[in-house]
Every structure is written in structure tokens, then in C-alpha cells.
Image 1 (cartoon, rainbow, N blue to C red):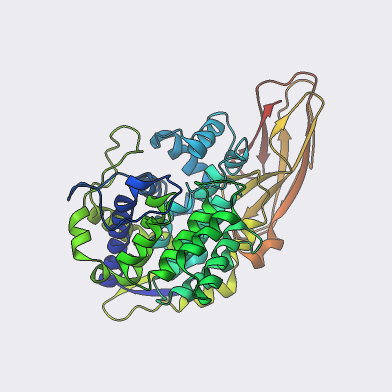
Image 2 (cartoon, rainbow, N blue to C red):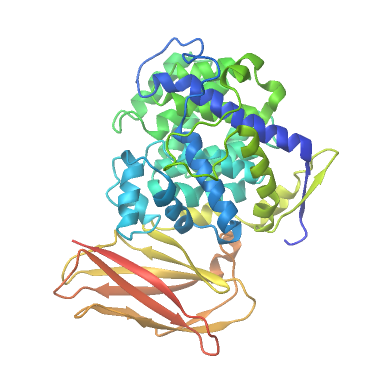
Length: 487
């Protein structure tokens, strides 16, 4: 794979990235005053004063992820890194945001942080609304974009519908850099999510009804009925409204956003996502000048903790910083970038997609997977078979999934540090082969080590059980942090 080159027209990509963020701000500002009202609206324009952009967490969290990428780099990026930025920078404690932060502060790592105690909110909207950063950093290469989107989404949504929604919208926006047909974009993006998920069924419903020429208001009612059991503020119906706006808006920017807003519910999220995707598709020339002037270029935050000085202050600054990070992110994923004056050439995506199936790898993990335990030359994932909560005398089972990047074969030794009276069953020696992180045809290179831990008579509120990993002839020691809450 080394040597594959993505050729991108530098002016075109900058314009599309900027238009993406403009569309995000426009849609968020348009829809924010009507957020959370599950009713048909009849909105025809903005409710705010010209030049007063309405702040929105849809954009805010992505600014934090940009700072994380700039500080830590894409080579080291993981859900664990993003979790630390959640705690440092993200102020809100509402719904899934608060639940994941509570889990993280208790020592529970992603994706378990998005699953534990989160049945009510893991299907909601907090993740798919922040997909643009990943799409813009992997334009035309959804395999790469959704890998980072999963790292992001699972922190507060585990393997819920909210995470599937994030994979879909990220894929759509990434594909939009190289494909102009909305139906083709949607069809390709659907390949990244389970076809038995609510998100998939919502999208298919809108596609089918659109082909039947069903009135959009009737389609909206169908979406509401499909998810009446989980209520409003949830991803399946709202992602359906995004697809509805895109199709029934017939390519018109204003009509598309207004149609989605008039569906009601999470109106700032639906309009902002449509605005972003159409911005990518059409560039700045496709954005209505009067709406761009009404919102302006300023970024106003509502969810960033304090006054973090490295947060971009304008959409132009955000665009410039994303543009500078783009080749670094792609190089970390084995794609070289040439910025050219001529026509962009995205054909490398076909080679990349024939080589790997990132969604298959990601979606095969258990809901209680802890991501990103790095060691020199590799990474380990902890997959618990159930929630990481234990009672006296109870047993927790799981698997340690090792993947090593260097070309040699190496033996590692394990040592477990247990509370008094506890026991652990795990192999004393582990043989690691060479493999890759998220590629379907390398699944057989994962070294899977099963373990079981049985609690003694005494179980604390928080139980840390580090597993020490060493290798003969190597100086580096690393620790796998098993963390179990007491029941």
C-alpha cells in the first residue's frame, strides 16, 4: 500500500472544506431556535439577527478533536485519547455526554464508556453531528474516515445506533468529495453500517418512499412511527430527516435545509449536517450568498471548557488547520497526498477499499471493548464479554486482542496484579505475529488471548487489575488496565 497517491486540487479541496464548515454554521444557526420540538414546522428563514451565529455543540466537539489530532497526531489517535479530551475540554453533562464522562472518570474506557448505564441515550444524536472533521481529513476515502469516526462515536454511544449513524454520515460526507450524485453517495455509505440497524431501515424507508413520490410529510410520519418506542431526540428518525431533506430538497441548498428543519425534532443537527454535505458537494459557489452573509465566518462556542486558546476562532482558520492536517492523517493510513493545480484524482480509494474492510473489523467488536492500549510496535484491545461490573465470587471473561506492526515474531510474558482473594486465568506466554489495526484481510493476524477474572469475597467500588506485559530481550514494559466496577 505504501506509494499509493491521492491527487487533490489544492484550491478545490480548501474551498470544499470551507464550504463544509460554512454549511455547518448556517444549518446549525437556522435550526437551533426550533430544536427539540417534535412537530411539523413552517420555517422560511432565520430567527437570529444578521451576523450573530448561534453556538452549537455540533461544531464545538470537532474543534476539540482537531486540537487532539494536532497535539497527539493521527498515528497515536484512539478512543482513549479522545476520552481524555472529553474530560479536559467538553463542558456539558447532558444525556450521553454526562453518562460517558461519568464512566470515564470512574476508569471505564471506550467503548464501554458509551455502553455502561447508557441504554436510554446511546441511540441518540450526539455522535453523527460531529462527523465533518473526519470526512474532511479523509476526503474520498470513507474507509479511513469511518475508522476515526468510530473512535469518536463509541466514547459516548458504545455500539448503539448513535455510532452507526456517525459511520453513515461520515461516510456520506467523505464520499461527497468525489461523487456528486446524492443517491449514489447514500447507497455507498449504507455499506458501512449493519443492514439490520434502525439507521439503515430509516434511510431505506426514505429512499423507497421518495421513489414512490410519497409526500415528504407522510414520510416524516412514517419515520416517527418506526421509532415511537424509543422516542424523540434519537438518531434513526433524525438521520432519516437528513436523507429526506437531501432528496426532497432536490439539490437546492435552502429547500433542503428548510425541509429538514420543518420535520422538527433535533433541527439544528439535521440542518447542520445537510449544510455540511451540500457544502462539500457544491463548494462555496453553491452556497446562497445571503445566508452566508447572515451567519458570517465567526466561530462561537458553547461546549468548550473555559477559554481554550487553541480553538479556531473563524471558519477560515478551521479550514486552514484541517487542510494542513489532511496529508498527515492520510500518511498515517498509508496514503500519500500530492496537492496539484489540475484535476483531482481519487481513484486510489478503489485500491484501498479492495484491501481492507474497516467497518467489518469495527463492528465485530463487543460493545464493551476498550480501545487503544499502545505498546512499542503495536496495540491491544480489551474485549469484555459483558459489562465490566463484578460482584463477590463472580467471574468476568473476555479477550485481549493484540496486533503488532513490526515484521518480526515476538514472545511476550504476562503477569497479573490481583486484589487479595481474587484469581485470574490467562496464558503466561503470548506469541505475536505481524498484523494491522483495522483491515478485514488481516483479521487472522490478530492474536486473541482469552482471560477470566474471578472476584474474591471483597470487591471495592473500583477495582484495577493491571496486566504487565514484558518481552525477553526488550527493555519496554507495558500494562493493560483491566478496570471493573463493584456491583
